[in-house]
Image 1 (tube, rainbow, N blue to C red):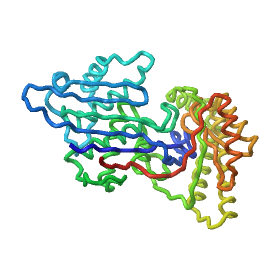
Image 2: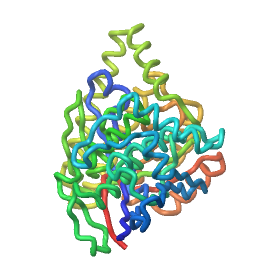
Image 3: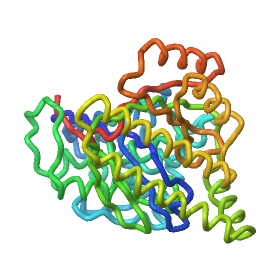
Length: 387
């Protein structure tokens, strides 16, 4: 059997987090940091009573989970979904999958992995039933830090599983990275969204869309528009390594909005204008160094304004403020990305900025115990290759 590899990018929110929940526009983009999945379907066992297994290896964590085909069939029953038609995981099925995951004795310190492992089992058994196979996952993305690691996982797993299914017809001799057709990508993102629902409950669908299709999107009240950058954008992403509770942060913003309705309405309106202006600047042509620099200066100003408004919403954090102060020393503009309260901070790296300054800034952030990642913004979405 052929072995397929898939990679799907993480994402950043360039503008509009939190305010988007209250009707404002937001801008999100793929980054060139990926989750990688390899998937191999094993040949059927020669004997009728032989029992194969479904295996998931999380290589970065040195964890392997395995379920025998007979155990899966015993707990989940005979039927499974048609791989060309994504279906929501029923409460009963979620309960059965949770029982199968519990049998794996996930270390208590990593118990948060349970929802991701459940998502994997749901996608695997829905697309391939109980066929023997092995999936190996590695990732460039720090987990739970607002960079879309769960969507990247769901998209890359769904992409790899579908590539060896009847739902998608591909040339298995292609050893270079390639993209599925638009319709096939639509199928992947619908499956990934069902996986995201297992992990997050009520995801927006934005993360899996960006991870599947790549590039940049502008979105407001469920309406998505793909936008194209006229020039490359580079960001330094600083992971503060401070964990946070996204639901609590979202609820906190809503509570503040109910206490100060007029003031917060003005904050959300300002964010809406910032996102729309940012989207227009990103798409505007920039032919030479002068126009590129002017464009980047405008983006920096909008990032700083957006960060000020996020502080008004009460979602900053001491660690985020430390990153902002550090980068200001180097005259670099930053903002938090995602839920805030910790997580990651974006810093625009201007095209003409010297490597020496970047290295100095990174060294200072490293000394604070933060993790720094450089990323190109608005890159490629899901890609597949065979080996």
